[in-house]
Length: 204
Length: 216
Image (cartoon, rainbow over the protein chains, first blue to last red):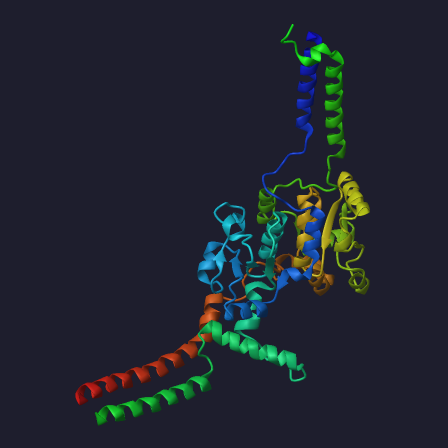
């Protein structure tokens, strides 16, 4: 009888030792490396600057722009309503609330693509969904949205439509009053209205 | 004795319980899912790696590889077959990014790592190979490197790779524009117009109020 207890106790200790060879558990979820590579290859993880501009203009509430450059660069210039999460603090608990918000589409951007891509890969590994990269980054943003170049005359209608959109977007993002003819006609209208009111005021 | 344990009445029960216990544990261990690939770097370590710019191969370093002075390097073209067939870096193998985690390819990469061979991944540009490179680094393949500039830069400087040491045009992450300036510069003519048009109505509005005040 005593021998049985002793044996049982020894067995338990040996089995407990087996816990040591169990794989280490991490306190965060992560996706399989194969799935990670698969997601990386998908072109759907990119959004174009045009798409971002459209969402910004339409004030899409699901858009969450994340600037992964350092704070210094962010303070110099950033896209409207962008949040600054420098790449080296993307894992910091201070910013974890900004990532993986339900129904929000987080779009990473940097000067080009690389920092945003690195942030994206790390965030994706942590199984954060609905994250995207603004393809081309701010360099592409300036080139396509702020300083759009007209397409060649042989270009398709779609390209001209795109150019028109970009011209409009450029006005929207740089001060909303670039088009000279529009503002002229507006001022004329206001001038006329004012004359009218002064006349009635004099009548009183 | 009334307070004798049940199993002491039937010693066989103890044995049965023990055997069952051991069997359950063994079944658990056998069916324990061991993933084919596991991360060896934590996200934090990965972050440190990419921030330190480690594992990058500069185009001028490729020169020695292509001339054969360094023979412990294998180039892998991760673009698809079609793009590879149109042109690739001399001596590069083609393993499309889709197939990189195949059983044979993982086995091959493991062998290369054992042999002390470095593996340079490249795509059309740095971005294309960045993700796959990061995945393999996280899987512990620290012999896997990333070619800066990618194939596009290589084709431009095929014949003078050694001279590109001082060329920094392939280094990304730099702003091409002075962003605040560019945004301001395009805005300034517009904002001038804005000010002028705004001023005009403001002046007239003041006149208006004065007139009505005088009229009343």
